[in-house]
Image (tube, rainbow, N blue to C red; front, side, top):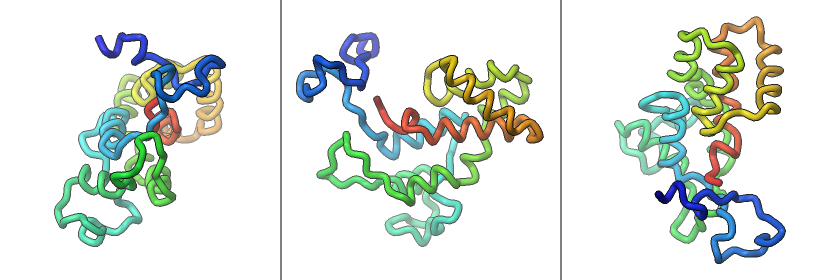
Length: 183
């Protein structure tokens, strides 16, 4: 019932009549995902149980400040991406360069995971594969413009195997503000 309510479905885009209204729920405020929310979203988008983003070129778990040896991938991720303190507003974006670089450069995020594996196994047509990737990451169908952009991107990578091509699209979508912000 809450999800179907008008206030819950409000856009974050201000309209002329509610541009200055911050107190009366005239629109939804854009909020950065918490590390837990981002981790869960990455797992869903990739159809993976664990996403080990906070590793790669970062210090090992035993060397990261405050991380106990043997911590789970989720614990390492949350610790690495937790850049807020108790006084930080939920609408304030606090990720820094290390977090952005981890999202862009972590090998596991570049591989595509189970979502891409399902697309390749099903031998989906390119438009259907693009739609599947949009639904898995952004929970919406791609617009005509989105399909044109992704089709153009895929056409420049015809020599790559399908798994690599679709993993690239998934990587692009997971690194958009539409994926990492609650709006």
